[in-house]
Image (cartoon, one colour):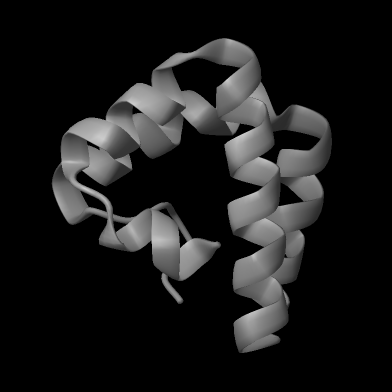
Length: 76
């Protein structure tokens, strides 16, 4: 799912991250799939934090996606 998200246009990424409940679901799915692909400890920490505090990270990821076209610690 992380590679699918990163292949989307920036407009689609931003729209997915702007909608509150969709934002949280997308964050969880993308973060955990990135961890399963990379097995890095930093992606695990990000996945756990997003599971509980996803709305906060969603706003950070909107800005990050605008700048770098992927989520923070979820480039897979």
